[in-house]
Length: 401
Image (cartoon, rainbow, N blue to C red; front, side):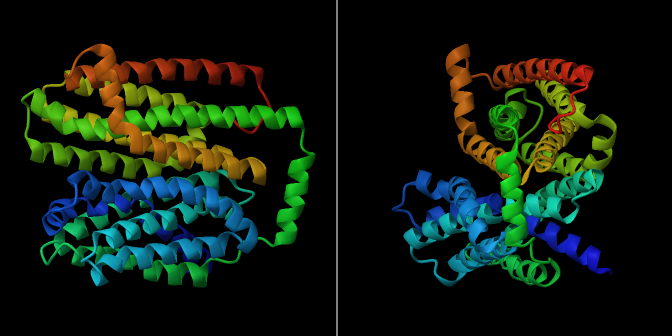
């Protein structure tokens, strides 16, 4: 194995940890039994509270990176995930400490989930297609880590609930591999030079880029809330239509993950073909197959729809991240920060999206709510096609397209 492959593999291995927070969801009933005096809602937060601290850490990471560099910041993050992740195995009699460990776990992930994208970009500075391919693979490794760790938690849970936290011991070999095979990021001299170049860039152009990135952040927030909500509501939808049971609904979520996994591996090739159109095409597929899922009376068809929904969503994230990393260092930091904050806030608030639509539409029908979401996504995709077509027709030289 060449040094280049070891470096790429070590970079991608970090992505295995990014979506590992919810892996302990199966522990919640056992933890609730262990702490009967604790409000069940607070116990449920053990799976979601890391997302809030990811947002905080993304903001902290910007300053920490400027002090010690990307590689060292990522290593600190991985170290926190390892220590906080396995802490419940050693000390599981205090819910307060358990809750605190999950908060620190989220901080750890937040320190590296933005920077890993930028290190991939830095590793292949002159090859946009290679960057797109590796960023797509990074997305697949995120999904793979979430799936594998969740399955492993289920097996360790047979011993006891706190032993299942040993899954986070995987962070240790990832830490070692990253330390040994990923070179230090560029020197502070280069960073300062780039910052000076960023400062000298055209002010109006920079303002437009900021506005575009904020717009993409808002768009992603809407898409994430709808996508995560579909994950939450797919089992109630199947039950409401009397075409399956809770087990089939659980399997459906796994097929969403499978579609997302396939998207990551194929993103590089799709990007070469579709370029800027990959975003509206992905939104079109997302909205269309979400609509088909609402009218489907076949488990096989609904399963296929779920795979396409997972596939299309996982084409959107790598596209945005890749587009932003093509900008100046300053703009790349801002863009990837916006994406990750929008994603995590959207994921955290997604359950409230159903409540909002239920209130507006005066219905509790899951089928109607998902149908409304699909129509909203389709409308956004139509606008997206118009925007990309307009930009392409003007043949703008801007990178962010």
